[in-house]
Length: 172
Image: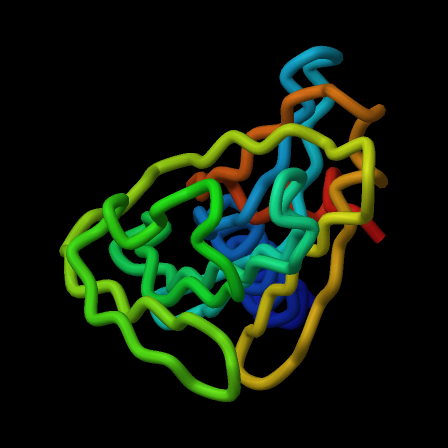
């Protein structure tokens, strides 16, 4: 009888141990925090190669701008900026880049090895700002207006957190 209990208990203890190891392991997560309210949203588990794009309407040019990033070493690395007009900003001065014209758009291919731990955006008054996250071909879309009122600042960041915390706090 004791041998049967022992044989049953060992696999059960092993399963509990493995479950705890998985739940307590750390994952790399894309977070978005409203700086004004302190509310933080856990968006997606990310890894090297995850692609993000931030699409917004430029307030002066009244034209769309798309900034593209890739996750590298748990940081946001800019890789491309697409826009139509340089009437106000000279975006090509922001990064070392190759500038090309394609289909009436100015495209900056970033050559810098610059990376950001976080990026702060302001929730716009004029038009929705879309954050698109591409994880192995699966697309997730978020609008900054979901996370704050017009004029509030939000911080996009890559963080390491316990997996169990992500499961408890992720945005559905």
